[in-house]
Length: 120
Image (cartoon, rainbow, N blue to C red; front, side, top):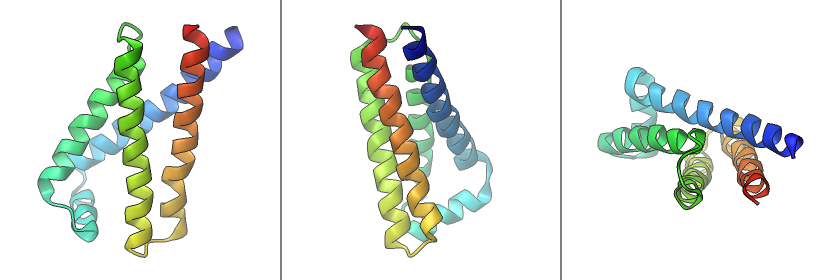
């Protein structure tokens, strides 16, 4: 059981920190606004996505949130990561930009699986 909690918290921390970091970049890094233009997204989407990432990271990190709410955060992050990979691919970005979200998706899946293990 202790191993399960360690795997859960390490994977959850990695995902949450990555989401918080990217959200902070959405708000503070002018190059990120340019990246959203590169993808053809409107500026308001960058703001919405940044807020959603902050909320999702908090939901995953705070143990008091119900599992059902956490499942919505996992689903949202999964959609975001798959969409990021597709957007990078569609715009002809380097393969590292296409693969990175898929790697993070794998870490997200590990977190989700181990959430189920520690809750049962």
